[in-house]
Image (cartoon, rainbow, N blue to C red; front, side):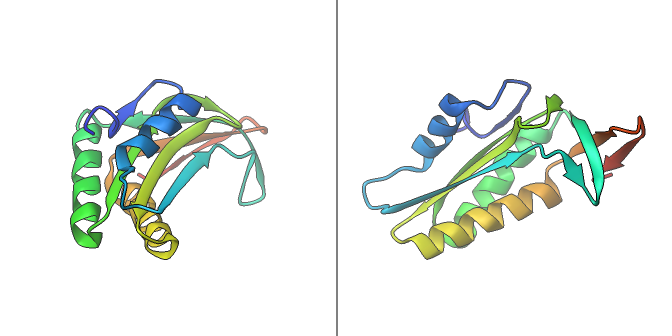
Length: 139
């Protein structure tokens, strides 16, 4: 699973999404919930053109610890891959999955995982706006 739980500059395409889902799949799991965080064209009423993500060198290790902690807390299988570098509107920045016997637990675990990633993994984004200004988020 460590090869899936990582921070990377690679494009997060359908193959990556399938790999993250496969990392949490198990015969006893009837629900697999996957979240894809996609760069949107607007934030707080301002038009966004692109994002630049920067990651601390330890970001992958922290992401792995977050996944382990959420798995231990929920008793469920979770995995995630986060992208850094320059992303355009429509690009996928995060793929996170959780599996469980039933959908409610899988949805809750996936939501918890995403919130913990946003709060704990040392990744910061710089939003580029159509007016030429930019703004750092998550510092």
